[in-house]
Length: 435
Ligand code: UGA
Image 1 (spheres, rainbow, N blue to C red):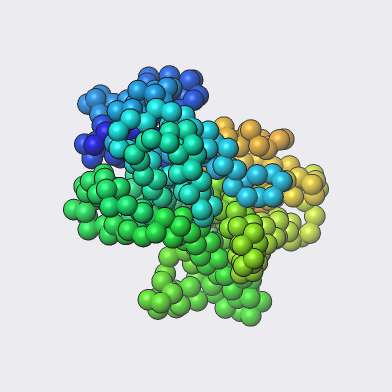
Image 2: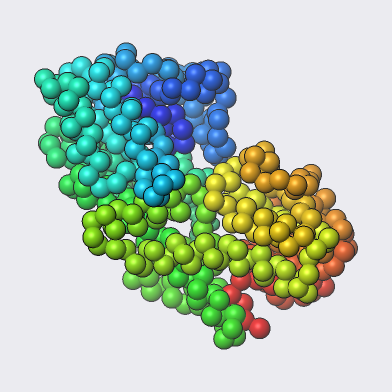
């Protein structure tokens, strides 16, 4: 199949590289000429395991090309994916559709012959109808279909998620479009991935409902973890105990410093706004979002408490800055709220992250960035593990303790346990581990 992808950001690039790898002929398009030039040179603008190799391989083999212009690739394509950003609108938190609708107008002008326009960006329910209207206005004579095909990739695991998805969701209102989508995703059927066809609005809603449910699951276990601390239980044991019930499931039950990233916080806000607009307020989701915001700040208080209540003039070491491992993404990372609150309380911050320090420099001031974990903890009053990078899973705790001014270990990802930390001579604070 010939596919054009508008937007060569995270979703567009991963989708383009994976579809090319399936054997389709793909053009990834972006307005940003410098991004396209670097992609043409084989440089990938984001950090995502395996993506660089996949892009180079498919570019060399001629199935994946890059362009700043929409016209030719779209005229040739049987399917055009819209994968541009939908950032939160500052005035009300709703998804801003400017980029989507701009892209659709460009695409509409270039379409030729029956084409399926696939909306991959996360968009409020009913956007497919708008997209259809916009194309109709520009090209009243054209034969086309608009399909919703939300993506469920996780950063850091995007290639594996694309190639082995739990399901593919396609919201389509016409049979021809369903056939085109089935052909595009046919290679995945070998992996037994279910392709779910549904109404377009249901597909749009599925994306928000999935993210809201997952985020609520995290907010839930984080509240349980607070209660565990007070009641003398261990949240890890409780999560294991409830997770084996198939109705609950064991994934997304890791208590921690709160969820971040470019998706959950933004999509929750958009869903809350959409629910209000439809007169069906999403109170559980509103609460999950509020609980999570408060939690990030509460993590700073936890660190301050571990230091005896005063951090003014003292050095705190932060291991991990990105919102999760295997990404350089700092968006809505708990580290931002935690570091800012610690700095407000007068602390000096040293930090180390295996990949995220360049991005961190753009959002955090007055942080001393370090060579590695050991350099980072040197002279520190406390060390906080904020992101569970593999590199932090087997630290030499004895060495860490001897480098530090005081042996305070605040393990916000429960990588270590009280016994292990005790043995190395640390005062240990985890998450959800009762006294
Ligand atoms: C999330 C969803 O998992 C994807 O399915 C979805 O496609 C994506 O959003 C999106 O909408 O684009 P992502 O934000 O990349 O993916 O990362 P997750 O692995 O879901 O983690 C999100 C946050 O939740 C992280 O801050 C992580 O540390 C936190 N988390 C996750 C927990 O605190 N506990 C858990 O048990 C799981």
